[in-house]
Length: 145
Image 1 (cartoon, rainbow, N blue to C red):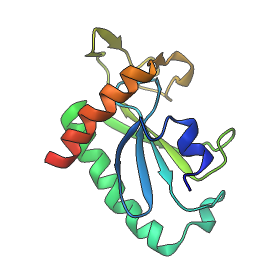
Image 2 (cartoon, rainbow, N blue to C red):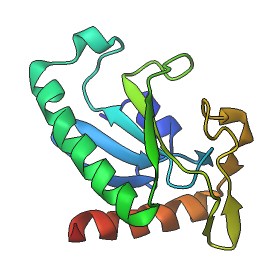
Image 3 (cartoon, rainbow, N blue to C red):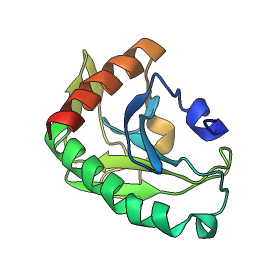
């Protein structure tokens, strides 16, 4: 069964890719263009409870994410935030960071926090259709990479 955190972030419609232990999802609220959520598929709510296999697989997921986002967003920096305040399952918010706004689907996506901490409250909220379109675009790029 899929964990509540993945469902809260729109799974399965937001799914970009998955590895053996991780789901890569489009984040519906985009503080920066290309923001993702990396969700552990294991039923764990503390980082220390993640299995050794999932820790090893995390490298595979991160390498794929960075390759994808470099090609699709051309980020200058990347932030991985593990907040887990509302959504309790182990997950990271993955935010590509950049100085100049990115354009997508007729919208502008500034990085309001650049060059400091990300401004999570300044997100562009995507409709469920827009999330699915972006997830499909990213999924195609993931496969081709």
